[in-house]
Image 1 (cartoon, rainbow, N blue to C red):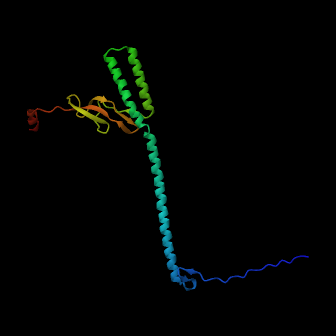
Image 2 (image 1 turned 135 degrees about the vertical axis):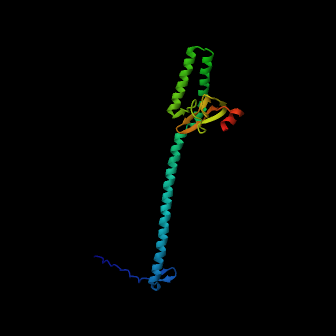
Length: 196
């Protein structure tokens, strides 16, 4: 005995009237559809414009973060290097003092070797001294603490360096403290004669 399988076909439902924003589908005119299409097109264009702006802002943010990261890595060890400068200064003073007091040449040579190794180490980290003596005074690189009258040098020429200045990559991390030349003041009689 075989059982007969019967399938019941579902009744097809009649399409219901779809209500769009309070208006039945049958009542929507072509003009209303075009108006709604235009509104949605404007909305899509606005959203696309916003998306483009946000995408551009994100790209700019990524570039800015990468630049900041690069700058940070370039100057990350700046504070440590600044802490080493007094040691270098003291080694230079020790060498000067030892030479003036006629200390043993072995002592002077030893201190010079330590100073050289310090300077080599600083050089590996892109630290270089600022040229001062004989150079023109540059307020971006030098800090003048005294002005001396001098007829042998041009005005604003650095006569002596009281403390060495340093740059890290392209940034001044310690300006050179210097003495700058100045032309002597002319006496009153000489001024009057040069004015005539």
